[in-house]
Length: 528
Ligand code: NAP
Image 1: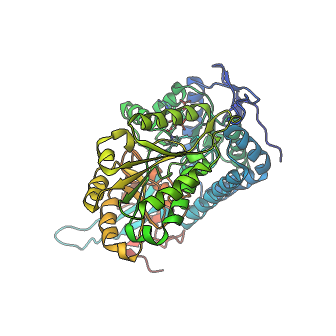
Image 2: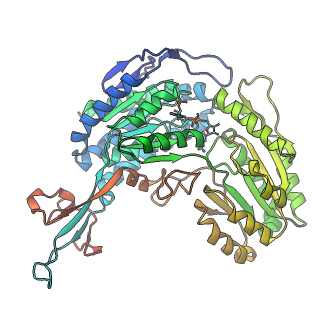
Image 3: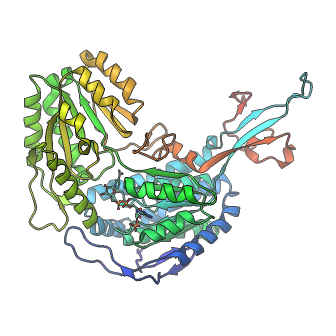
């Protein structure tokens, strides 16, 4: 199959070239503008896409689990059918290497198929039955049954740093479509060609399963107004977003100012602290240092789970650890960053750290030829400076990190207690470290969405148990996850049906369990 890129927004089954001017993708390795030009969509296109999505909602939410699951699987198949051309375009628009793009393609199709299995399984609907008892005294007990219904059309903002796995057919889209909610994507302006190829793959699957055309639309443009109009449209009922703290908060505010406010699930910023405890440092400091640098510099540091801070208790093994990390980082060649804006933000983030007076202990190998090159930086400071220098607590999006030499356990716990909300927190510990590790886990579980041991936070496994979330500013909605199967819960709400005749109940909660799904009856798993 051949991938098509025309520069259009995809509104239902119509290709619409937005009339608000044009823009192009940029190859961040060369700085060259890529063909074709894309038409800027605006308020008219938002209104069309949202109206279609609202129309589609009435039929899409009633599709059977089998139809929705097969639809998600077809999207994965359609993406695989254009994988070679898609990979070329992703690489050209993002500078990400072929291996990373192949991995991300697999993650994207895997996610879609995982959500297909979730839809078939049916437990997502959280069916519960509290049977009635007309003979109960002093009052009869009503029959109450609960299941989940989709919220309605969801606006998804594609992420710049995951052009596939968190963009047009990424995790937010897969979980929203799985829930029975149509999706309108606002594609990230840095990879419009990638967005169009994937958007066409979803459209092909919509056609194949004879779904309403408004089940999916893709809008492209570069203005804040486009995303703002989408979030403000009364037919949009929830928002999924991955990007900057500023962008996420702007959308949260817009959504709250609507006549009917809606939830915004924004994944924004994190520094993902790592703590290396003394026994682990003494036993395997060199391999921890090497792993740290690999995790900081992979994908040019443009991962939301990149470790931006590493805390180590000061002692005789710290200098050796530091030397290995410095040497490894000094050998890392500069790589293209995703786009000129992100390259510029990285440079100014590094400048902000330098302005604090903190020592730059190592710098990677710069590039004379790459247009948007990101050169790695490693900083070293001490716990007291860290505690008094707020810029050191902020995310620098790119291949930079700070090693903090902490005076003692008391200072370490003071630092941990002062951390902002995080996507992840990592502890390197051997058995002798367990007493302190236990105290850290007790605190870090309140700070982060995921606490991990003896590994690295980059590379998020997609499965049933994964959490990719956390308290603000990691996300705007700490009770949720954007990765893993529980992501579907963001786009559902529970409804109770009281004393409803069986013939009028939805299948999930009818007598005899016609869908054969997991249900709780009087709080206990139903016996079949
Ligand atoms: P971004 O600037 O937040 O943009 C993300 C999306 O939101 C884009 O589609 C953008 O489109 C839209 N948007 C941003 N502000 C908006 C507003 N006020 N109103 C309406 N729509 C808005 O993120 P980015 O372009 O991916 O990267 C910029 C910075 O974000 C990076 O340097 C990095 O610091 C951070 N970032 C963090 C993560 C993470 O996972 N923690 C991931 C990616 C980026 P328009 O610009 O066209 O409006």
